[in-house]
Image (cartoon, rainbow, N blue to C red; front, side, top):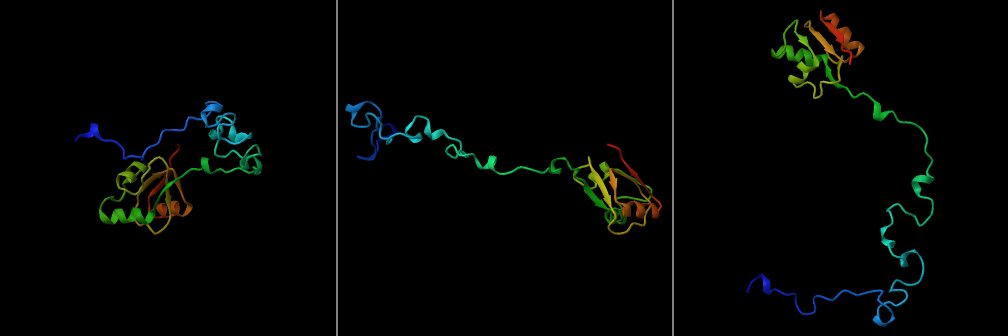
Length: 156
């Protein structure tokens, strides 16, 4: 016994019904077992789009459309707090007077995307750092400058 000798069990398969082959075929002379008239009796009736409603105006055309969303155009910032900058100084990964850029923040793991970085003012900072970022909150800029550092906004 091998794969070439295998057959389905007796009665397990049936030959396909040959529809629409004339009156003498016993299977659909004039209507081909589709019933009479209407869209479902025509050829290609099963290929309607999923949103098709039988000729009625579709839902997406009936619902009013108004307004505008700015969401696709908003600027998504990767944020870092001054408290995290101070923690890096305390851990010895940054020192006083260091220049902190978005690339440095990405290398240190504070941000994922260095293309758009914003520094926020949560926490406190006591070490003077030269911080460059794309945006600063007012409190972050004030705290960095109060510690003796500089906050420089990058133009991109």
